[in-house]
Length: 248
Length: 375
Figure (cartoon, each protein chain N blue to C red):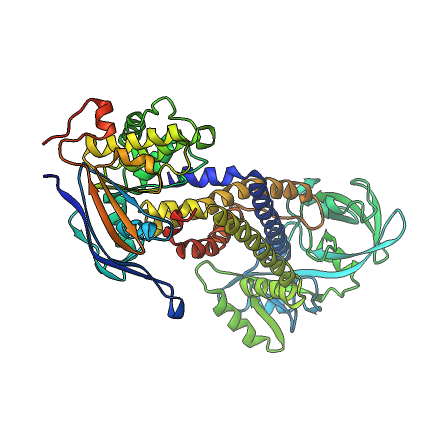
């Protein structure tokens, strides 16, 4: 693969709690995320998936190790500097969508752009374009409460991609969805990874999502214990469905 | 978007919004009424001093306010006139006495006697009649607010002041006393007659200074000549009267205390509702933080919520406050609303809302964006 590495984690250790209650949630995790790839992070409950996702998303800071996001070493950055990095380089998709119920789909996406300082008609056009990209061009003015779970998660995907981040991190993106909607969201994430050249990492338990992945990382007890990469030349289900071949 | 989000957060829970607005409204009305009463009282206390044509007042030693002064020798007028910088000096009589109503019963009044042509204090805001009519036999002017209190139905009615015949020949509008004791304006000689005061006595001598002459210098010069009297500039006498009625009697302290209480109640109510609203939207604020918003961005949302609540509450509160002002306009204790007070109330409301937002901001500052993964 010749894709660029956009996120680089080295020997990440995270200790949670204090004193006797201190727990080593991550015990030295190293990984790279590359542009154009959909990576799945799988593991049992309590294995450290969400902690790792929080660190890769610059929401938590590691106790030890280094993290570089889009060329920026995060070591020693303050909470506000990490927030700047998040809004410029990272898009998030949450299990429970985390949409703002009082804002329309378009406003939810515009809010994420507003946080980045993008305002006015350009932001509106960008929000509309992102929603059209996820197939919700007809639901711009709908409120989350009037949308299905699948639609809400697609709004969340639109919100994540609207600001053109380098990395998209998804926490159990299909957990709250039925099978059909779950597959639709995974197809969308795979499409986002390939067509917009984002690095996408999705934390999941769901084995049905594996067929969309370029790479699967397995985590257990705070350590990466395995990595499966789709063999060169073998298309994912998603690519087969789209009739595309991966570039050699 | 911060304003949109703040607006939607506010209007999303209309019951909470209603509680917030009632809190702000209650606070504004309470503060407006208390400060309006304070201003109204201030205006009434100083009205006669402001209106009287004199820069330096000579009076009995220890005089605390306009209504309660002991007589002094009228020759002090010549003492004043002989002082450099004084271009004129006039006598003014004012004292409490008894008014017998034509309908039966009596009431306490403050008789104010002054030359109708020369002053220094003739009735103003004339609603009926003219000041020259004070020169007619037994003539007095009263304020139309007190017609009923004084048993008078209309101009022309007869009453008695300290056993002397008094005929109402004119009415003023809004010339009221802080003590709620009606003013009875008449001539200097008739006032002396009403008060059984010898013609060589007066209550005040008001000296008018030459243009450009410092009244303080004139006061000092007169004071040197009348060591056992009280000589004050207009500003000093105004301050002394205000201090007496508003602070020595505790009336002003009660009014200001009521206004502070209103502010505290409003602040607590707004703070409580803002805090609980912020708590309810904590996940959304955590999401914003996870999406990379700065702390300042979230603070702006909360402050915008507070400011919107304040602005809405202010408009509603002012509508009610202005209605109260209108209803009390012709009462013995009118509430005054000035553009300055309206601006002060707006400032106080926004300040109150900003203070109220502090608890919510403190809560949201401690937010852990990682909670977005725990829902």
